[in-house]
Image (cartoon, rainbow, N blue to C red; front, side):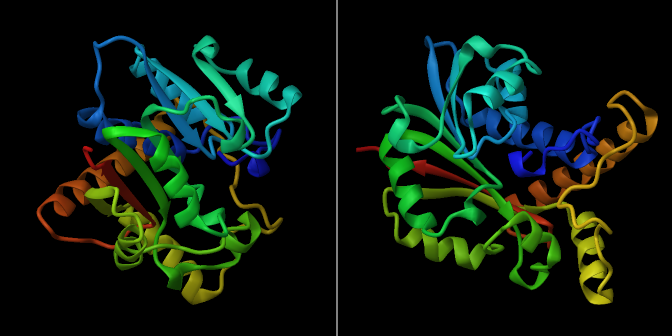
Length: 257
């Protein structure tokens, strides 16, 4: 979750967050090297460390450097108090402060859309990535879905495959390995909101709180439905078929020098 979207009212994680973390981690697993000593990852735009925590629970060989311009010492202390494995998370407010000059993985999940010059940041991150290693990107999809939700979140743009191919053409050191849209069901909901002019939240918040804990049957059913949605989109994407989705997932590999 983006730090700007944190709220005391959001007691439980939204099914979208739970499913996205599970699905992206499952997609990422074949691209990770394990069992060869300690490895490093950079999570750029890491927000409230929810994904870092989920990643580290599955990957004991990794240490993560979480980077977010909104981190303060007090906020970092609060965020770390809510998660496990904090000894394997270090934080920084910018790439200039980063100490991971060589890393085995880069994550940029729903943060690229806030950057004025995303090509420059991707180039900087790629320069820290070891040859043959991967960067996973996730971003909101389709410009025609840009709405009040994006304005409130301070997002600058939404993405599609054509835009990403053009962006990656500026970065020859990165080879596109996999990309597909996901969450067709949520795409349809957002499209309906856009067409009808329905406000996503009467108080103009980017994320509406979820009322049910993770183990509640309603949450489990919602997460299972979104997991299935993601899985279908991932499978179709691998055979060159696309359904529209609310988000776009991209994996690139740094060329071997």
